[in-house]
Image: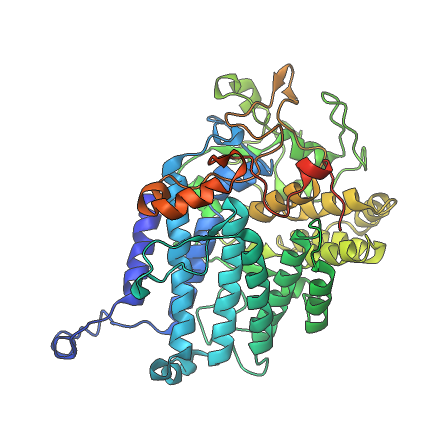
Length: 523
């Protein structure tokens, strides 16, 4: 963690470095250490670090992926049970804002008349601005859906004398993010490249950046679908009219490469030499079509094995079994660890590969969004399931058996409703724990994941170490550093939380589970 923060600090220093004295600059120019960075390199560096930090063994591995119950820890289960490490929480809050500032710098370089002409050598100015805005929106959405109200309008304005940024209302932030995506999509010139190099998501393809802007706009609009007075349908209609993902070729995924440019999921096991995580029993049971007899829970496609099971995990002793979720560290015995897969010795074929293309958003997700938008339409739902199967198999350079896929599609499409759409989206979102956690909070599905107090294995229950009002964690507490570095704004933000405390249970403005039932309906 410290190594990553140090590297990011260096990147930030390089990106913002400048001399105040022109004579001094002329006398001390080192061609091997440039005082300015081309916009495409700055964008590429910020893009990579954003992926490294969001999709890693900490923010994802010990937070979002365990909150979503895809992964569980094999040894120390405290984070699975909502005991956050304050040092980690502080670090990510700070790092994300540093990355936001770097995307802002790309925008400034392409708008400032003194630098814009030079930056146009690395791609269309407008397209660079648009792509940087889209990445900013994506990262801000992850941040606000993690902590709730956060600094937005006054963030990153230290040079303007704003040392203590106020926290903005999450609903206001959402409106601004959607506005930013609309402006970014409208700004893009599809006849020009976004970047001539450095872009590891779309290789500078402006058309695909536009589709990502609109698809992300549809995602954020859907997040608000349970909120009274929300104009989510109108917003999604706008996104569809402007153009969203049309196939798996449009998937927004960061393409890692060979060492040292490897995925940080790979790094967690094979570079850091750790064996902390494995797949959970609730998620394996979902993929196996197995009902939860301990908690008397049914499965909508009972006894139907999901073809993606063999892509997401590996068997042990010829059986697919997950680790018990949410039990105390002292109860996590070697018997449980030795039954669940050991990914350090037998890893999944692609998801822990060094060059795994980590998805920010898939075409399948877009189809599930459209299905829900249309009242849970069957056509888009089936297209989403088929696209997900094709995508995940395709990452291995193969395909699932055609008859197996046809049988699976027939079974899971017999009753297309809110649960079916939510559950298939959850399965497709594997390794995108940030969005999966959001969808669980928004819809209340899958029912098959464990709620606090439910049985995990034998007589052992999923017990939490922080109060969540008997639901899965609703938010992450504000970092403690904010209470000293930005005290007045921190205190005001905390006063707006439920009970006026910095807690784990205050819901996001779009999370209506406690007020409207476990599965709130769209408004």
